[in-house]
Image (tube, rainbow, N blue to C red; front, side):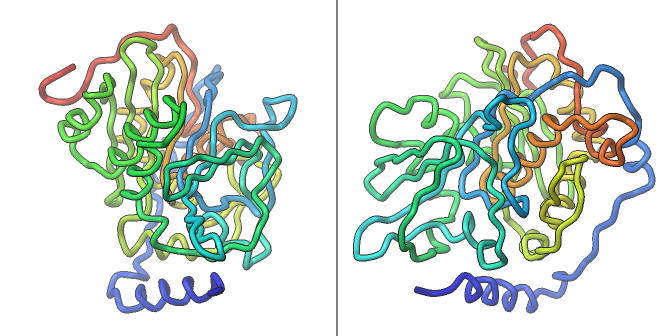
Length: 325
């Protein structure tokens, strides 16, 4: 079995050949000021979290402070191959175990094999066994193919996998709208920052919304992925992955995200956070921060003030693509 360090070294060696791999991105004074503007009554909450191939984001598991059992609603999903003597699994969800991390959120976890069969464990449980890591199982197209066509009675998992994974990597509103139209959803918000994109999708019938965060797609993303240092975030009682924190801040503190997505979250009946890979890490930090809701006196309020929203009466939001709904 190849150790995770082999893959880390391989990725790092590839990055070193990129002339822009060590480009440093920083916050602007304008973004910092905007993030510290406090809006009263930030009482919105993420209804659930769905991730695919998500890495660990905290050094140890972080329970949901708003749940009596400490569990987060939703599912953490990953790919596995069961043929052969050893199970091959997506390398990314477990790679940080090599650094003694255990920090997946306390929530249901599910895996799907090459036959489309899903196994699920309840919150607080994990799959146990000898596994061989595979980077091939991490590719987003494989996640769409497997989870979007899962065997058995899993209609919601199939739906959210189809409307959230592939669209999270698409940049144009018209392109996203065309992709999700067969599923009956609209794109109602979009923001771009540092070659990354985040979308807000809405079901016009239920008025529920899905927010997407884009996964690893550029060489610079891998540099952030490899920043294994930890840092405080949003008043959480446990430190988080520094690179994932940076990606989350760069996206959500940008004026496009603030204007085009954050202002609309309160008009959603439910907000569901989603992401594949790095996008899953960002969605997880987003969800954790909203649940933590640190007060203005807490240094972590800097992050919450850029993410929180006031829950309003749900309403049908206007599609932003050129052809409308």
